[in-house]
Structures are given as structure tokens and as C-alpha cells.
Length: 86
Image 1 (cartoon, rainbow, N blue to C red):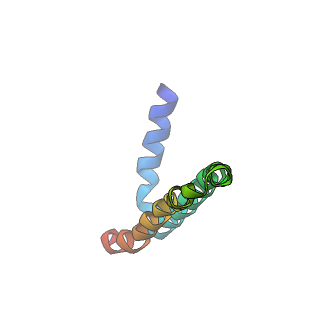
Image 2: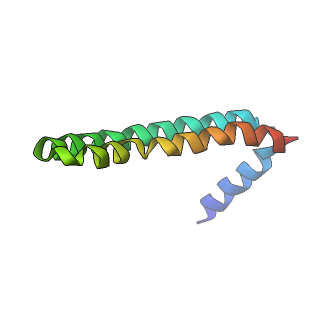
């Protein structure tokens, strides 16, 4: 537990030196990576469901595109963070 407190203290002391744009870029990149991993499983399941029942196309499409909203919301961070940084 002490090591975690030491790490948290070091991060808080270095926080003013970290560029906010770099943090926003990391946030968008990780969001896109997470959405891609989610879409991999959802896409496979949607194709299987559509193969069995053609009426599942709409639901499968919606579920496949849903993780992309995470990336869109992360892109909002790119525009919001620099305005609050100064």
C-alpha cells in the first residue's frame, strides 16, 4: 500500500509538467483500442446471428457500431481539455 501512495504522490508532483494534449491523445488512442477489441467479438456474434436469422441485421448493425460512440466521446476530450488547460 505504501508503494501505491508513493506512486500517486510522484504522479501528482509531475502533473503540472505533463502536456494536456498528450493526455488527450492517450485517452483517444486507448478508447479506440478498446472499441476495436469490443467490435471484434460483437462483429463475430452479429455475423453468426445474421446467418441464422436475416431479421437480426438491424440489431447486429447497431450493436457493432455502438462501441464507436466511445471513440466519438473520447474525441470530445481532444477539444475540451486544451480549453481548460490554461
